[in-house]
Length: 146
Image (cartoon, rainbow, N blue to C red; front, side):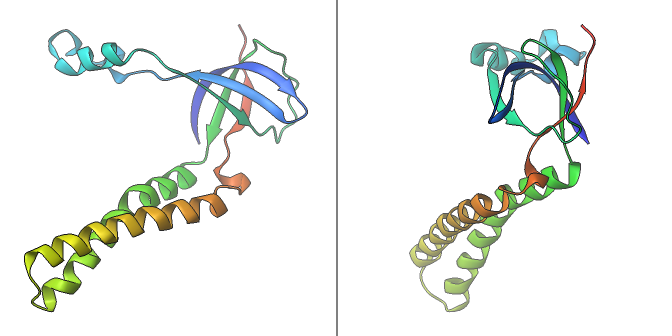
């Protein structure tokens, strides 16, 4: 399970709302003083995300509690592959069709773009249905002692 530290913002009938902060790997990097990536991260600033989490263990939490939330590695891997790999595969597939038919380069590029757009559309349709499953929802794993 991949876990992230968060803070409970609200507990209501809809669920438990947790805030996490987007952090950068720059804090743990030995080359942070001489890296241009650190400047980009600083320019973007820290962003907080608030989202609802499931509580399968029925842990009793209050607002401002420090908690750990997690998601299964398999679910994250599946979502990542579907989001990034599927549109690229559609792009390549649609580019191969006119290429093998000896159409001009403009048709190859046009079909490739069409495949990419269709790939993104299919991913969007699949995620709306698939991500309603509890398997893809973050869960409250434990309460941290403050």
